[in-house]
Image (cartoon, rainbow, N blue to C red; front, side, top):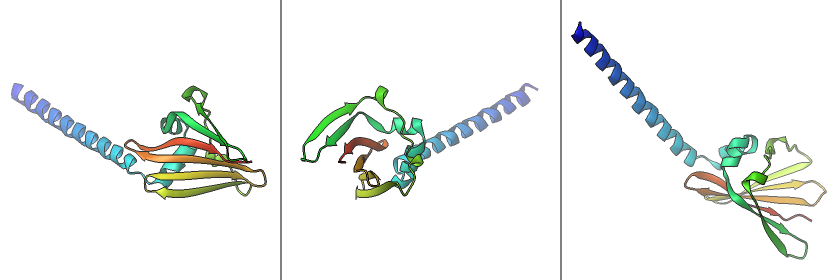
Length: 141
């Protein structure tokens, strides 16, 4: 009877250990996949998930406001002052979104509003923990 109980407990522990290793392996693979995530997949999540968005911004984030004369003013937005921007709610044809690949490590997401002079550039850079929004440039009129 003791042998049967000991054997059953051993099998249970071995089974738990195997499941734990499988879970750890899946978690590690999941982390690696998110680091290698294509920008297009990343930006879809960034655009509609407030927590994901907040976790993928380098705070305080640099905000550059350019004027017509070519002068620019720099300021920073702190995390506590950041408001979630649901980029999926911006509908065409009024809102124009352009994705521009600068390199394998940098993308620009450009927003324009037709006939208004609004021209905002979000700069994303790939870092060791994935894609991060590093700068916002207001280059509009």
